[in-house]
Amino acid sequence: MSLVERIAEAVGAVRARRPPGRRGREMRAPEVAIILGSGLGALADVVDPDVVAPYAELPHFPVPAVAGHRGQLILGRLEGRAVAVMQGRSHLYEGYTAAQVTFPIRVLAGLGVQTVIVTNAAGGVNPMFRRGDLMAIADHINFSGTNPLVGPNDDALGPRFPDMSRAYDPALLAFARKTADEERIPMQMGVYAGVLGPSYETPAEVEMLARWGVDAVGMSTVSEVIVARHAGLRVLGFAAITDVIARGPVPPTPVTHEDVLAAARELEPRFVRLVRRVVRDLKSG
Image (cartoon, rainbow, N blue to C red):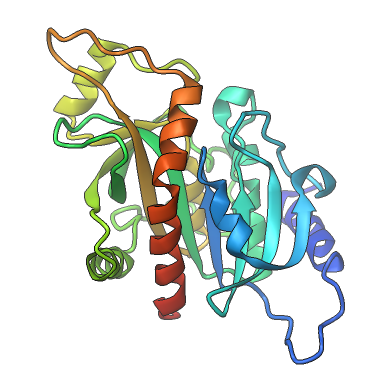
C-alpha cells in the first residue's frame, strides 16, 4: 500500500468516526491543528469535541508509549474555530521511523488543516532562559540523524526538495509575539535543535549546540515541521523550557522525565491561555 493510500485510509477512518451534525452546529473540517508535547496535554480539555479517536484505533498511526503523551486525536471547536488536536506524539527514540512519526501530519493535511501549531518541552541552552519560560521557535536545526523525506518522493504530497528557509511562518511568529505582549505573557524567541534521544545531552554536546546558536534542545518537532512544510502547511512553534542546562565548570543538575513533566505542567496555564488567544485571532491563509 502506497503512502497516499495509507493517508486516504486513515483520513477516511477519522471522518467515519464523526457523529451526525448536531442541531445548530455545522460539522466543519479542521483548519488548525495543535500538536501537544510532553506535559502540555491540558489544552485538549478545553476543546469542545466532536470526535475523540485513540491513535491505536486509527490505521497506520504510531502509538506513543511515553508518559505525558496520551495518544489521541480530538476534532472539535476551540475559541469558535474548527481544530484538530493531537494529545501526544510518537518519537524516533521509541523505534519509529521518521516517516512513521510524521504520518499524522499527512493525515491532518488530508483532513483540510492549513496551519499547524507544534509544541514541545525542551531544555534551555541559552543561559538567559529560565525554567518555566515559553519560547516561540524562530528556526530549527535537525540533529536527529534522519529526515522524514528520505526515499521516493510523491509529487502529489509535496516537492522533492522543499524550501525550509521559512520553516516557521514569519507572519505567524510576529502575530504570536504581539499576542503574548497583549496577554502579558513573557515569551522568549530562539532556535530549537531536534536530537534523536532518548538520553539527555552531555556537557560537551550542550556546549556544541550553544556554539551553533541553539537556544533550546528537545527530542521531537523537527521531523513534523519538515513534513508540514513539504505539505504546504503554515507552521507556528512553541517550546516550554522545562530546565536550563548549566554550562562551563558548573556541574549540570541531573534531569529526569518526571522533572520535565512537572515543569511543563507548572507553565501550562500560561501556555493554554496563549494558544487559545492565538487560535481565536488567527487569520486564515
